[in-house]
Length: 246
Image (cartoon, rainbow, N blue to C red; front, side, top):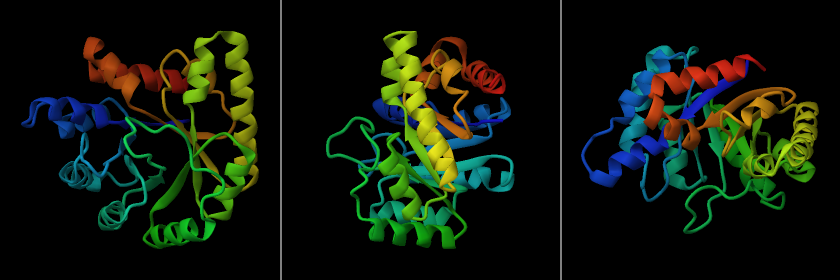
């Protein structure tokens, strides 16, 4: 079954907009896990505009006793403090993503021309500490080849282009899906696991959940947004049911 990893960044965004500790990111994690979610994702940016280093520490401590049951995925750009954080907490997975100055959210995967030697060194360092490494990439053969050459365990396919295609109708959605399916097959043939994330929701997941060899989807914005109206436990159950139908 495809694993659901809930990105709790938006809970932290809401908390930070007012100050204080409400809503609690740790309580959100507890609700997700109680609902049957088996993955939690956090993306601590350098400016701490949503998830903070203290949140990562608290979540890592809370999930420490559930190793093998609930996975923690720390994602972010490979800046020194992020790598130190990953080495300190040793999550199940680290997803390395490129970050552009001033961006609101991720806008693309790693360009295939990125330094393979530098990334390979980071990947080896993290894997030596027992951390599975995923690289955030576009559904592009060159990007898949680059990730494999870098020694990554998995790729996370950047799915916003699929989400926009889905909005344009069935023909555009199917054409985009086939591109992602081809990328997933190539990744699998290259020895890589396949994760996916960015703008996936209950509607477009009905098609995307059929992606070949899909291991995990990371979903935050759409899931937390719907939780405002139906409750976090309910929406977690909805997404888990959608993935179970794959």
